[in-house]
Length: 423
Image (cartoon, rainbow, N blue to C red; front, side, top):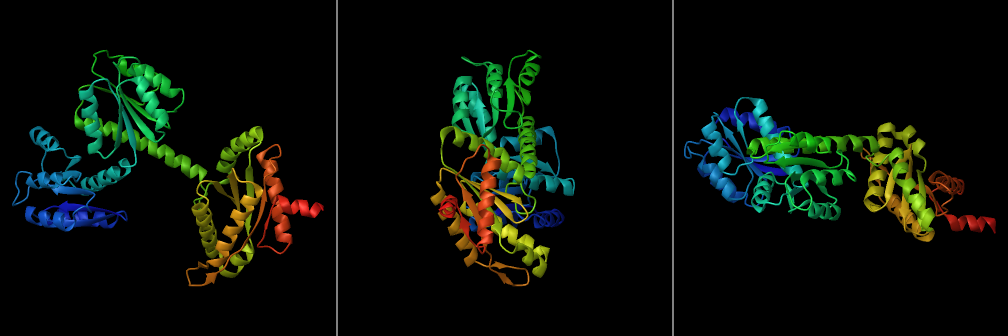
């Protein structure tokens, strides 16, 4: 949860902000109505404040002194102001604030809270700035850092590509046009050989006067373009819009790939990821364990305690599998079945790991809404027989799962058990 400081002398405005913050589970706020109270809150909450919303004019600080005080503490600040004109705008932005909001109604405060959330998201977003001018790189980097982005810099296109390959977390590239070795448009072309627009945003920049440059950038794969010199708000709005669009695409992708109930990967995503891993293992004759897990007596749980209890059980099991198998591929196959793919583990190692999970699940009850404790078990089939496809390998795992069920349930059956049957 993020803690913010709200400094506002109007009781009406404070009441509206309190209501907006109260509806937000991710935020908590501390309040002050004067410069003196703001100083007390800063001292009391030292090192704990993520951001601040501050009124520009207070009875004991009529000229924005409270904003200077908060910024001096290194706290990102969004200014609340009752009026707007160009002179005031320039004065506010010159202080180094994140944004300003004219107090015109509830939407204004919802917007301000939205900026706070944007700052939180930006802390996990890496941006690459590419410009041969050190002055320009520094200026753009400072604007981005004000918005809490993680910033990397490069002085030309070749260096930028090296950084992209070394830092897969980069989500946005801002590149100038006129650079030595590789100009901005050539850089865009090279980036688009590997990264789609839906994976990486590119914003082109140029101080040159050719009107066709924006079209050249966008036709070659840039998402957006800005002419230099640009003002702070134009820059931040373009960056914010593009980053939010990218995040929305990623959210849609995640929703299409996740099981709606448990949050685990779904069957479709599993096969998308598993088939290339299977082909690679087949080609290199590498170890790849495929596991099929099925909860024991799940129908009885639904019949006895209801489907809500059954859903809770599935969520708990998915959470356990995801927590203990983070570096592997886990998906809900459907019903009470789960797929697990364990690259690099031989069959003994895979059986041992799945058996440990079975014991762990059996030792910790799932507590239902009425306090009832359910102790669960599962059966599993584990195979390292690669066969010719992922489907065929899972069919072998399913055969072993059936043997585990037939042998009394709550068992893990693997390749060694098949050998013993043949003997």
